[in-house]
Image (cartoon, rainbow, N blue to C red):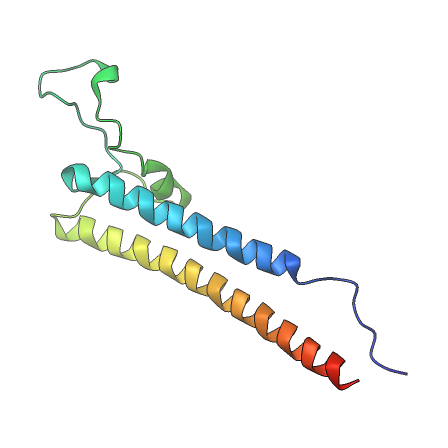
Length: 123
């Protein structure tokens, strides 16, 4: 009698891992784009010092506020200050860990496929 083979493919695992990796890359991209404007993550600044028009904001500044919110961080983080740099370092480590776990899931799914193929070819 053999072992029952579950009727589940690892496509779900692979798809989930790829989605996590994609979202992690999008988060990192948003953070880097936001910081490059003025070294502050999550804020919005005016194009001119005297402008109060909300339509006059720099478009790519503050775009990573959603990343901060996703990780439960409120306020801004300035990389020129030690506390801000530590917040951003911690945030990037969390994102990196998430992407590494996704890569490990992909590797595991690949190893499962290889093992199953090897077993099937042996008869």
